[in-house]
Length: 358
Image 1 (cartoon, rainbow, N blue to C red):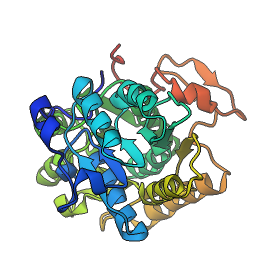
Image 2: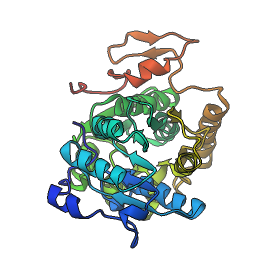
Image 3: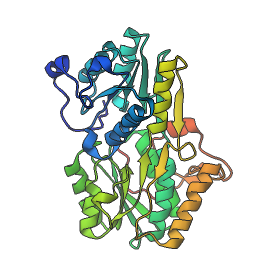
Image 4: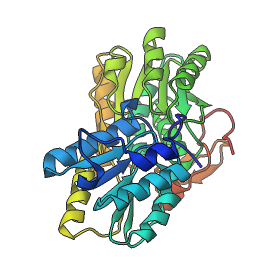
């Protein structure tokens, strides 16, 4: 299964006796439990989910617990079951590969509510949720297209799943709208969190002529390489400016706070229902970090216009005309690729170089 980390999972023996929990809270006192595939210190995906968990505690005055660096498969199932058995009213499982374990445990605990991030399988007591990160990709693509001097953008990708492919395509489309000469080079690292691989990928892309680096991986390593090599980059999942104050142009920020607060509250007051949520810039689930000092005024204005147009509905990042990598038209002018096709996207748009891994 796809994993958001290359770190080893927590051993079963340890899981039988303990949870990594916030403060001194015991699992039995927790109202909401969270399962993270990476460490909370990744400064990306798991970090932002943990920010949402802490917002729940602050807003609702409840205690929560979490387990970090949990591999998919048997380890995940044991952790999810332990959190459900401990008395949590609701359990959040925050990686695609937790989908089957979540639904399996949910059937065993019909009175516990479960929320699975980025999945598609739901049940009477299982909801799914994700963000429209591709909307943020349209914003950063506009910036990259306007600021690149080499006309080469480097993209560090995790796994060839629709979520990641959508991002590559949305950024490429936006960049080529403002600069038709842009090409995008992709390096697949087959990991969500591996600073060494991510850093090496950034170096390789810069050596191939990329003067702007973007990523769909979770560590700040690519930004740090960009800072050291004197090129620009974008943060991922959180504002990573502290790691690269000169290189970061902006970052796509995953904002789970409002969603987690509302769903925990619903589980507590009995109003919780099984739903599918896919929100973006308009709803505030996707945010853009402040612009770096290197972003010129005209580029800021253009990026703001893209963001605001997506929010007010006058622009969709996948509005036609759109050609695929082979130059074949896949969306005519005046049409938009529907959500169902976006959710299953498995092809590159024109301007992306190389073959898509199968």
